Length: 500
Image 1 (cartoon, helix red, strand yellow):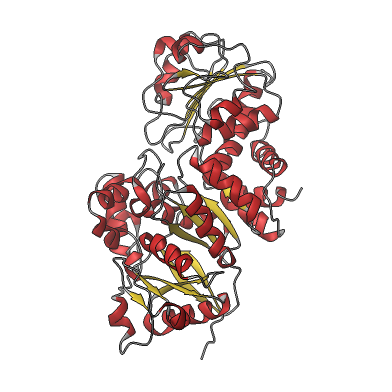
Image 2 (cartoon, rainbow, N blue to C red):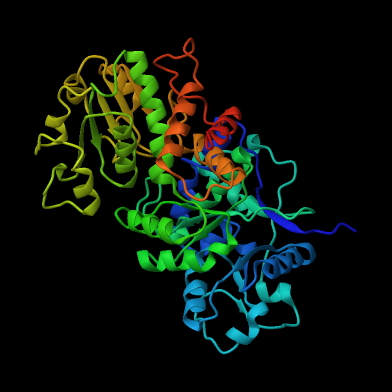
């Protein structure tokens, strides 16, 4: 009889082309998020929540052993956690706030510490022995056999809903004979979900499952979706720190600015595992790589060009900082209130900080006026903000990165019609897709392989340069500035350059 000693989180489906990527991740995943936002009970239909149990104890190996037992005997996808405190209030904080990710919570290994606690949550909490575990947890395991994407019908959104309902989400636990590395935790509060905004942790769960699929499929990294109920920065930090011994690293995801800056900074300072906010730094790496290649084709230098940003949230500020790090000198950022400048009344602390390095002339107008004479437009904001007149007011050979998702600031074909020299978007149905999946799977693979505890600016720059160099000189063109999002050589190259 096989003896199992480890678990890993794997995909229930393969992602091997742009069609499957669109169904499993973006843009198709948004349909499931909206269904759950409308009806929280739909989370049991469109994610693996119905078969997911969190096993919590004070010792990771004991939790792992229990998780293996639940999976091997009952088919339950059980996820092991170690909590580093026996304080009753801290245990309650964790249990209450991880509820959106699980259908039940198993605390039987710490029965003496929790038997008198009323957790007051809407899922079963096991605090001791029961006659029938399966019946107590009410878990339902769904598996796909001989699945073909061709059997799905309708639009991308409709296909995505069909897939998730049929499969019970897109991730599951797999038992292994060898003890595995602890998973990366994909931690989100659902306050800034791709193109959907603040929909909450529960409605954001399909996105985090999709992210876990890409971690495994592209980077061979086991990743655990952990959507939280709280949106308080201090509580998010405390929960991650209490559970950090359950993970090999943390990927922060879809947390609204400026909260995300506070969460990331505190975790980098206090945690003993690597912390990475993909919306910020994954985006920054891939945008910088694309920009370097686009400027090369346009025969322009980063230190000479005028760059304008539409959007000044987490992603935009991180992109801006990384571009500044390679020598850019003329950047102006715009948000809904116009240009960001030092001392602006509407600035948050992140805006005020970035204003020390951008818009040094103190321009105070709108994007419509500020884009005049610009060489590069980078949009990380909202749909349909860019028009013909604005593009025609830019410098010669304008570069337009319209990256709002799922609907960009301007469609690439429209931007090209109005005179854009090079266009890029986050969409897979146009050339030059700028997608974070080019970065985070390989980056975490390398971080774990080389046992790196802190993801530095140097690592991000190394990854950006490596990604840009994957498109050979004789292959570069206005329609090909980045490798394909599903090119299996990309995560290998990124991983190898993490430690260069």
